[in-house]
Length: 215
Ligand SMILES: [Zn+2]
Ligand SMILES: [Zn+2]
Image (cartoon, rainbow, N blue to C red):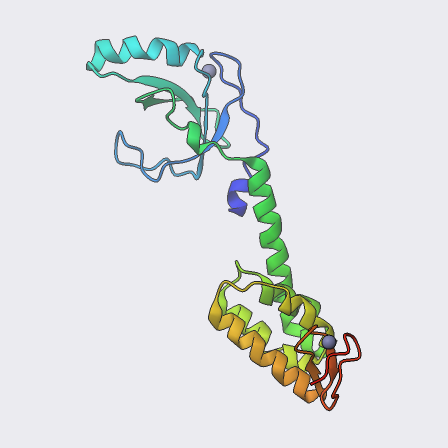
């Protein structure tokens, strides 16, 4: 994905209609010759009023007897002109890359990488923040989340419990491990959660100091 980002700010103009080319995700295989383009993205003129597209229908009909037309195309970092056959006006329009979505995805990915790196020193730094972020990150790999769960007790910071309790885990195995870690963390600190208001109270308390519930 980061390699696609390199191309996003490249501005290419169609030499035929002077409109900006759209950055599209390349199809895995070029239908015509069975070969890929060797690029993750293609810059394509998707202007329906471009002369290449308008005139292509007749050219292909005459030459090949097919109902199809052409779109002008350039590869990233290349000025070479290519003409791709398309069966209809909608071809490639669904493949246009949304730069903002991709940039936001990349930002989340970089953030995830940073937090995973911080796990290496979280215990000696007593830093629970990256641990919570990785445990709650539904897009992170399961084994990495499990590793993060393993740091909850050694760091011994009760402040993480609220965030962990307020999250809806999609993976029941992860949720189970988190619940187990919270239990060990509370026991080690002689604490328990009030069954009525879920505030943390002393393990030996008979009454909750937050909601007055008796147990
Ligand atoms: Zn054009
Ligand atoms: Zn309570």
